[in-house]
Length: 198
Image (tube, one colour):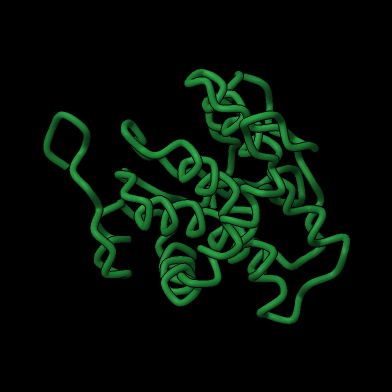
């Protein structure tokens, strides 16, 4: 665990705003594994949708007498089907909540602390750039709601749970994994970068 906070850009969303901080009422070890499940959800679902994953990691640092956690999954998504990209964005929160359920840790408060509005907002903003309509709380004409995208992600996370669990435990142990290491752990290919070698 780092003793100082990471650089501000690591703690910012795609708009440059600080990501919200939620209290996760768990021990450090259980919360860290939950964050590893969150990032593993992003990474494994991305690979399943043929997105090149660069790196996925858990980031932890001390804060006064306590600790903070976040994570990051870096990928190259050019050429990805837009709804698949959106489902990959939703998969982190879905996997983290599923971790709470599977490990007997679920409470309404803990599930709410898994909220990842920055992932949702990234999907909404990026899809809008390409003319796809994704809305937070309704189904726009010709588009999808975030609830529909979460349903897509939920099915994919359930189908890939064994792979997500394997990656989460490896990430918890090693802090960070490359996309190629995740591919080796799961048997899913890490496609070559668009326009270049992987």
